[in-house]
Image 1 (cartoon, rainbow, N blue to C red):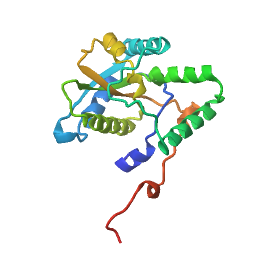
Image 2 (tube, rainbow, N blue to C red; image 1 turned 90 degrees about the vertical axis):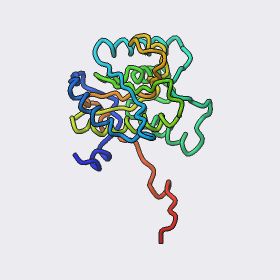
Image 3 (cartoon, rainbow, N blue to C red; image 1 turned 120 degrees about the vertical axis):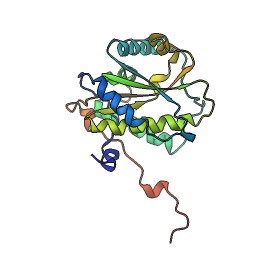
Length: 224
């Protein structure tokens, strides 16, 4: 699979087979992914790779914090501002399409909570890569760098027949996650990449989110 095919094929996988992902494959993915660009070659990323009991413990920690309504403690600054248009509309379109596919009515609050909990369980993926940055890094460009390496992980994973879901909301309860893993408080968990073999029997496997036409998001300067 060449890079263009990989970019076109990549999608967020929200249903995985329980089959474990070998450590050797994940290591190979990371060895390739660290070639991602970063500001001034700072390479700010650090990885915590979870599977088995360690991942189950973090799933439980996330769900406990969620059900106790623990205040969010994300690894990146999130302004207390709601998205305006057209961004809010795109978010709503995604949610409506997913709920329609899953047969969740608009007013079925328990079903929506159950879906949120599934997300906090990393969609039951057999492995998850937490992308972390040390607190000594004060330059917020690390957010861009973390996104770049997350995207590369997602693309390289396709070569091994793996699917991924890049998830930020699973990092909302950092203290609980760090406590379970023994990570020092200086490590900020920026984002997670859940990965595993896609469950092709799930209706979610065929789901593809939409994209805006290039002409609607591009302004050209200096071209004839």
